[in-house]
Amino acid sequence: MSKLGWFVAGISLGAITVIQLRDNPKAQLALDEAIDAAKDFASAVKEGYLEREAELEAPVKPVAKTVAKPAARKPAAKRKTTTAK
Image (cartoon, rainbow, N blue to C red; front, top):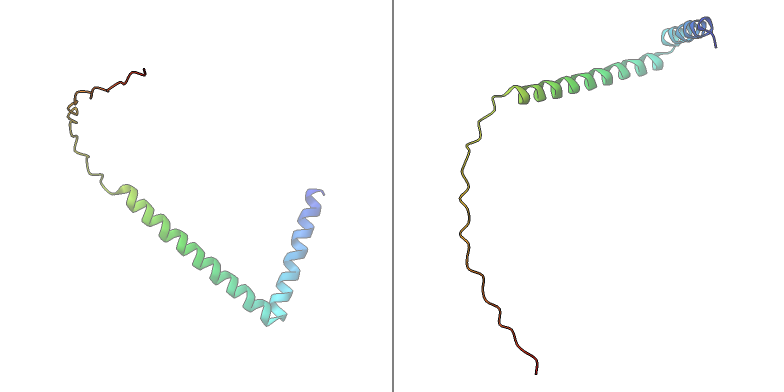
């Protein structure tokens, strides 16, 4: 479909939507609910973003370096071998 065809289709759908919203109170109510849901979603995303941003900007505590001491080695136990007769 050409660009002009998509343009005309968009204008037509927009006009039909405006007529429905003007004449049908249920359509207006549905639109208002959709707008409220979108605002709630956007505010939840914003809160999460700001919370994560605060976590990332918080100062990082330096980790204390500890020197690991080598483990003391125990002498290997001698294995008893049996001879088959």
